[in-house]
Image 1 (cartoon, rainbow, N blue to C red):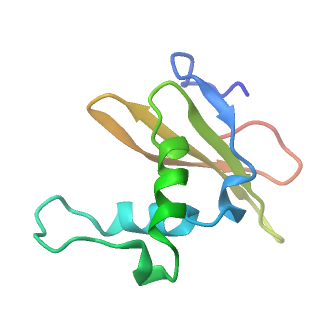
Image 2 (cartoon, rainbow, N blue to C red):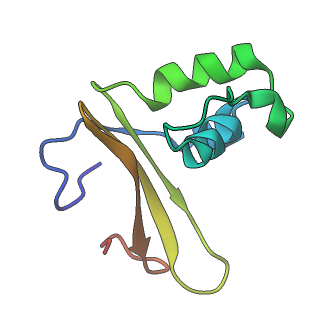
Length: 105
């Protein structure tokens, strides 16, 4: 997959990830963590198994492979999600894509 601005990133297809057990706990726990909390964040908060979450996290956060997938919308623009796994600068990028289009913003 080619996306402008991600020339240096090793993008790989990740369309199957949102349906895998352990995906949503990884995605949501990353949003809940601020690095300051002493409380351990656990996948069970989201009804998922820790072993499943561990297996998916190896795929999601691999610096050699940045998973990318599209989240279509029924009416209007959808999103392309990129797990940007740069060392020291990791995060999830959400890019706007218009229906039937291939150009992202």
